[in-house]
Length: 374
Image (tube, rainbow, N blue to C red; front, side, top):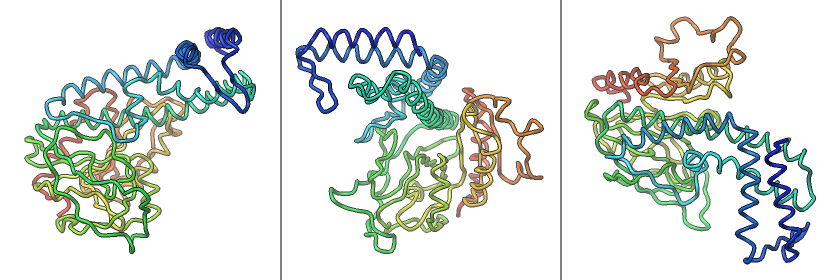
């Protein structure tokens, strides 16, 4: 167990012992205002000590991602200003303050320890597992944000658009697709202020943002963190190809795929999905962390994405680094079926080199004369 954590925890318990007005028991938690700031200062010090000492390597990786992400965000600042959705996004929190994001997993367990419900050894076991699981999720998603910003910077984006859709009203519930209400999808509006991630109770699934690229002479729409919509769209574009939504599609999308759309008219890519149908993407990205994923498992998802979504521009796996030897398939590499790369499945070890995303940009450039989905 972390020596620093034990020291910080002992200081916390000594503080509680010296202040009998503090009540922390099985059925009561009362921390008077007069001592609240001091209590939570030491409480947070204990959480930070646990994370700092036990997860130093994860924090180092997180700091590198944070730095690279902020660099791309600064480059995109002329056309992009991110904001948080109504509910706090854990990935946004991770990129802003990695240590605080991970330390939050200790809030309830530390109170349980103070109340005598658990032991330090049990905390080490359970919290370690939770933090490792959380890190794998938010790091992958955070790297995805870096990839998206980097790709748009490669595409020399100069303006952005937002589809202003409403959230479901209080008490409103989703209905089966056949019974879902009808509503128009708003026309995208030029806006620098964009959501970091879309609210889950939005009535439609729309792009996170749509950007105009002079390099493509087209609009590019990007959507990550897909979830099913509650309404049917009255004005879905006739220039796009639509597919039905079923359980297999939802399971596939839960893997964290990034959907990329290209169009000459911004309205053509204003809708990703409604309650009944899904717009086939022009290109798919899957950003992965080799430190927490197996190559063979990644290839299985890539093949499934290529088969089900059929993106004309291909499916690109973007890795944040080299693959550890233990995650590589026997023989040293993933077994690829003959012609698989040319058929649309591509592997890129981009790390944090923006220019290694050039093949993705070129695939979109090549698509401008091909009208991918029309």
